Length: 108
Image (tube, rainbow, N blue to C red; front, top):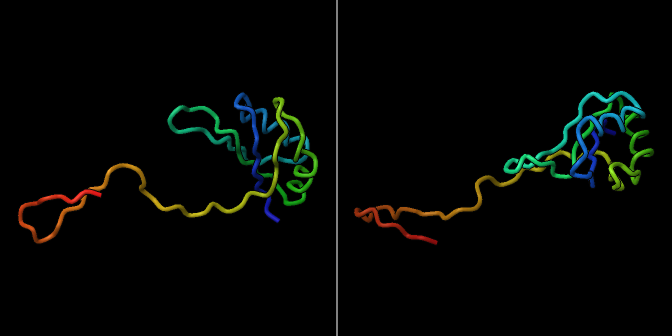
């Protein structure tokens, strides 16, 4: 088992210190990451905690999954590896037609 945990259903008022304090009661926390929205800078409602050992991680899951923090029931489980996502996305794409000589564009 991994010692990195996913923590979901966080209140938007929860800070990294709040998260760290809640998990420190169940073992040694080596890293705390609260995910923030790039545009607004506000918390996204989830984060990751790394405990020092898999045993401490399991203890934290047992104690905190479903527990209240900031008025919300936490979801705590082992973090899954991040899936690779296709890059780019969004926006209008324009392609040049090769060999047309005039540089005309076809749009989708």
